[in-house]
Length: 187
Image (cartoon, rainbow, N blue to C red; front, side, top):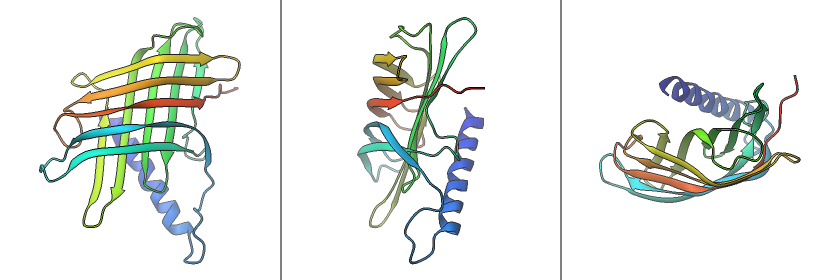
């Protein structure tokens, strides 16, 4: 998990660098093109490390960029199982969510090996709120109500991530739903 966290932090840093370097004062558009389609949205709750702030924040991530590998995709493995990675971000706030799982086949509705990574950032009047949380043995991770349309690549479902192994070190939860189109890479 540490390697993924460092990779994601590096990716976020690169996105920030591109945004800052590529924007002029009179050009509010980002320096790279992103697309919107579908969403990963929900709410996270918890308390900051120093107990000074109670998280009760809604999020709605609907952006992705092919340049930065942020699209949703699935692969069909040799044994007919599916490996799925769903990703959406909010590039303006540098927040993002990734949901990964395995399916036995295209009609399976009970995913295995679920991994969720979540990052949220928000500028407040006097603070900068940042929160990260990932799946691990100390956190509970679930994906429920999953549907998959193999004709369109559309994935819909609900997810939750709860526990104290997060950036605040205190009990927190990230819950929500997703509805987006994943693409199968052609090689």
